[in-house]
Length: 359
Image 1 (cartoon, rainbow, N blue to C red):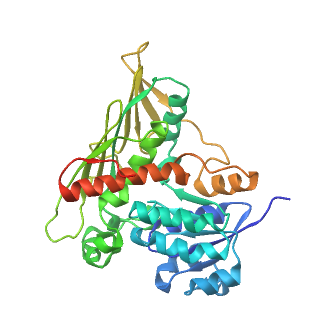
Image 2 (image 1 turned 135 degrees about the vertical axis):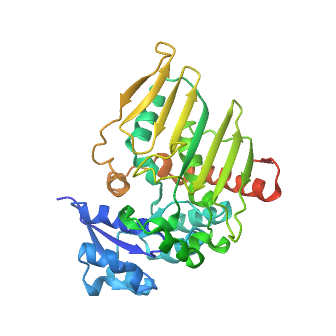
C-alpha cells in the first residue's frame, strides 16, 4: 500500500499556498494535516475550499508541527523571510517544499541549504513555470539536440501585478488592488518585494536549466524607479556567458495577465541554439520551432504531462518515495545558480554598472 503523506502548510504570505494545497488535496496519497498562519483570516479560503477541520488549524507553527508531525511542510513566506522560516521549521524533521523564489539573497539561500542539510531531509524550491507544458516540451527537445547548443535564452514574464489576483488566479478589481499596494509585502523593500525578486528567478533558474547548468560570467541590470513606490515594477537583466548573451525581463503591469490573454510582448521564453530556435510561451498549446532543415519554422503541439510529473507536489513526493534526488529547476543546486544571477542583477541595478557573477 502506498504511503499516505502528511503535509502541513505554514505561512500564507504568498497566494500560491492555496494552489499548492489544492494539489495536495487532490493527490490520492496525500493529506493536509495542518495549516498555520499568524493571521487566521488569510487561511479562511483554504479552510473552506478543502474542508479543513478546526483541530488542524493553527496560529503557532510550533504547535502545528508538534501536533501534526507532518512528513513535508509547504512554506510560502515573504521572499525576505525564506531563510528565517526554513531555519524555524527544518529542526522539526520534515521535508521542506518552499515556494518560489529561492530567497531574497544568496546568503539567505545558503542559510536554507545549511539548515536542511543538518536534518538529512529534502529541500525543494518550486517554480510554477517548470510545470507549463510548453517549457517542459522545449527542454525535452533541447536535450534531444534539436536546436544544438543553447547560445541565448530570452525571457519576458510577469502579470498585471501581485495585487490583481489571489489563489487559483481569482481576479481582484483594479481599484481595490491599488488600495492594497501600501499594505502588501510585495511592495516593501525590506520584505523582498519588487518584480525583480518576484520574477527574475523564474527566468534565471529555467534559463540555467536550458543552458545545461552553465553560469554566466557577468551581469548587467536596469530597473525602473516608480514614483511613490519602494520597489521596482520592471527590470531588464543581460547575462554574458562564455558564448552569447541572454536577457531576462520582469514586469508587473503587463497589459493583460498571460493566463487569461497573452500580453505583448508575450510571456515566456525564446531559446536560440546553434542549429535552431524555439519560442515557448506560457499557457500556449504549441511551441514554434526553426531548424536548418525547416528554417521557415513550424508549430509543434506541447507534450501531455503524465503522472508523476504533472505538478510539483506529486513530483516531489514521488522523488522522495523513490529515493531519487530532486532535479531541474526544483533542485537547490540549480536554483543556487539562478540566485547568483539574481543577486548579481540586484547589485548591478543598485550600483548602475556591470558586475561579475557573485560567487
